[in-house]
Image (cartoon, rainbow, N blue to C red; front, side, top):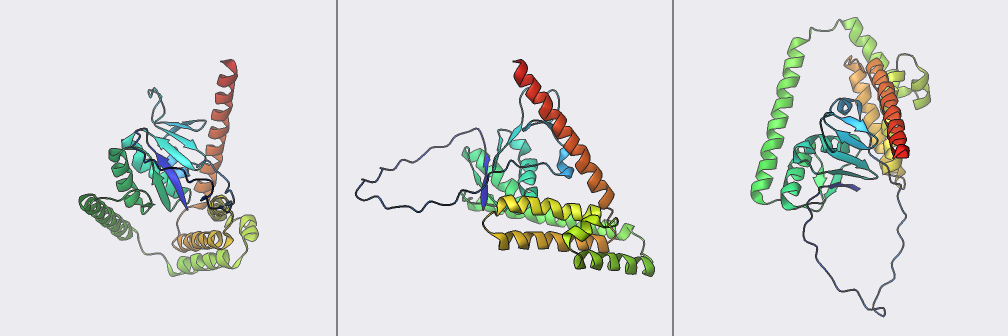
Length: 261
């Protein structure tokens, strides 16, 4: 399933003759899928100032650098594309369709390639493909160095702590979503899975099998992080609550400004 990333530079459109009535083939109506405006995850809220569905970098910006719209992200700022693609990925997008001119599409393709997303309506030249491959290799090497540095900086965990974390991880996997949500030690970790459940319900309304696979993959990832001792629970809940307060406040301000005009 692809969603759309748009620029403000239009490209040429091809025209085709409409079929005559006697040759027109009946089309089966496709079920409409629900549209959902992308959301900002905790790791991206600090990069933007959000007013309604408009995103700004700073209060000095005269116009937003991006807009969140149902099933699409719109931007005219090429420099913002890496973060815009991160928003797409965080919302469960696996592929995107691009609007805009060739320069915009090239930059968006490179940003998507770095995040592991595919682009449906852009075929890169061999040189652009080589640049994307080089970018992916550099990012993979950077992540490898960071992981090695983090591992080297950690002191070995006591055997008792490892056993406790493993038992907590296994409990997380053995319990239901509701049980984890009520479990004081796992409530925050379950909120990560709950976020994925909400996203997949919108992204795959007619494909419960695919939605279930995404949720299960997220659940296994969270269980791994629990076993590794990652501090995710309290931080995740606090950030979600703070973000919700900011969004409600900004939406109210936008509505008041609209009524006063």
